[in-house]
Image (tube, rainbow, N blue to C red):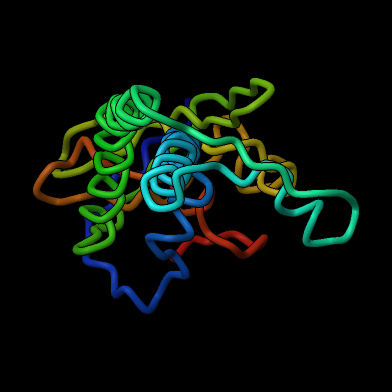
Length: 191
């Protein structure tokens, strides 16, 4: 590991970076997957509760490529569908809420500190960065994982051993994110 960049932490003005809550959530794999499950539960359940059926083939019928069929639900099927949707919401809802709160805490009053990348990890769905950063003379280890994004994976600022900039929640310093990973620009995001 190179020399430790133990700079003093300082507050970061929200206008000096291009991070938004929506932008962070759009890269975050747990947030994306939980939102897909939430929409996959809420949309069919609300259609069945309001219409009594699911319009199967709606888009192909709207584009003139076939007939729109309907899948009608009756009797005991409706409460079963609603119970299934409620179960999915009970599992996926807290995950999405947790991810929103995690990023929100960091964005509300970020403190910028120096850090260094330990390793990069790739899976078919995920690109993650393991790093270490220093806050108030103490070292913390962090890991940020985003959905696969080849442009971000090829950034010169994201290499093992590279110094990085971490945004840290000063009240809970174990919550952090790598600015170079989440920023939109391809250039180094260091401030």
